[in-house]
Length: 418
Image (cartoon, rainbow, N blue to C red):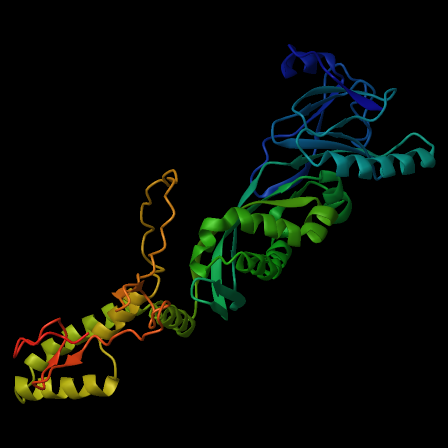
């Protein structure tokens, strides 16, 4: 059995006159997940008193946008169509699997098992039903954390690694991506329709339960609590991973989007984080100096307005400054001696081509002063190499008692003896 697409140019009104019976579904609201198809019998059909659980050969079936239709034969899904159009029911063809953008691999796997089970049964079915599923995005599902959930705050800039508690609320949307699994494991054969309210409390409880490990994955990315609303794409992916077994595999449901309205921390946790971040920022001497200078300026204003007199106020401020052991000038000097981590990188000129430089010449050793021996030989050492006489001293004593260095005495004019 199977479904054959009707002529593309034909309208439903034209085909209604040709089909003896046809099935259709009105527009599905946001709070409706599944309805049973409505069977309409035309004036040409002789089956006006027949059962609604039998699909006559050649019957027409209409599928609208945002809908997925399945045919259940004796409790087994034998047909599935998620592409809009008009189809004719034909028992002589193979089952139809037209799933559009749904989870085709999962649907084919489940339908294959059910079809094998159906063929094993043998006889032609006597209980056939048509169901329509809402495969549009189901929006405006509100959630909120009734109790705070733990969240790890990591700030590598200041070396912060802290566990805090946070609350959050918002809305999420989901979509049926595997209607067969939803039919088998959730709704089953319903008399008329299956609403979101029948499963909403269960979905919200499981959503909140999966929120904690999903937020833990965001904390591993060093995302701060107040930055979570700007990372909803990562959060949505993490939620689908956490809910894969219960939602995707079991019920055929996937999370489409998440919108976070607010993220709040307890006041004591928020103050503790701010205090640690400010304290870590003051590890930079320049920032600490600026903070101290601002505090000193404020203290000077307070001292000037002291009721006991400005002199008393400034004396107290001076004593407090001495007890502190360090001042802003010391911190600025420390900052100047250290690499500045918080300055903008300076523009660097492009490296120039290295130029060849002449190797520096070693300074020549100072030449020893020469002297002339009495034998006429010019010498440089302490003794004459020809006669062996020692080098005469630079200083000599004159007969008048004066210590002279030249050839003549500066006092009496006597000549230096040879």
